[in-house]
Length: 94
Image (cartoon, rainbow, N blue to C red):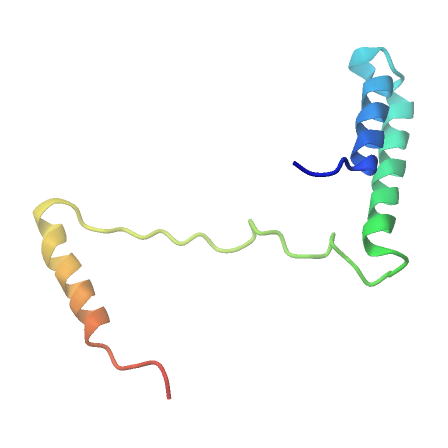
């Protein structure tokens, strides 16, 4: 398949050893996870400070668009009209 990822192996080993559900301390678990994630970020981005992945817009901030289409016998003329409008519209290339 692929070669093993040592960072992932370290992450899994840490979680298995320190998870509160497995008898570990919750505070140690939280701080250890933060350390592992910051190490992964440093490995991925290096010392660059300009990566602001927390400032990127959320993909769920876009407006919701609801498309209502007719059903039944009324849908047939609508489908034909949409097809005709697409088929015979002017080219978009200038």
